[in-house]
View 1: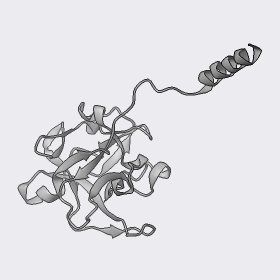
View 2 (view 1 turned 180 degrees about the vertical axis):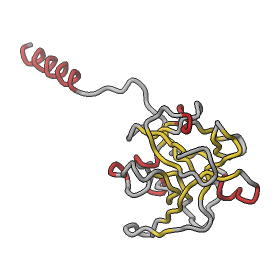
View 3 (view 1 turned 180 degrees about the horizontal axis):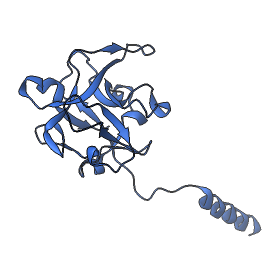
View 4 (view 1 turned 120 degrees about the vertical axis):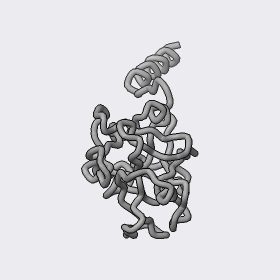
Length: 180
């Protein structure tokens, strides 16, 4: 009886110090529909690092999607529920996608989740637009491209910016969500 009581006390103590999660977050990648020149696809990604060590001051880029590895990395994982509210939140880092301004060529950055420049909409047609100006789309650069240094096969990166939504840029402006 004493042994059973001590096991119960240990179990209660472990429950008290173990974090519990009230609800599971559904995480998704935001993936460019057109592969352009990367068979693994391009996803929104924190620039300048990989996974949990990614720096937050360099904003977002289009980067080889990591889903081919069988998982979603922290720096490419967005909260699916918040997307429906227009908030492109990366929960691991507690930051949101933001535009430097609501003008053509504005960089796509990261910031705490609160500003008007952070409200985006993934439209039914796949365009990822700024809600404050739906004529502006999150766009992958068609001319700038950089190869990574560490992965095999090599990962590919391209800058992102706000550009005028256009049929001519459809391959660089049409997005979808992907989950495992």
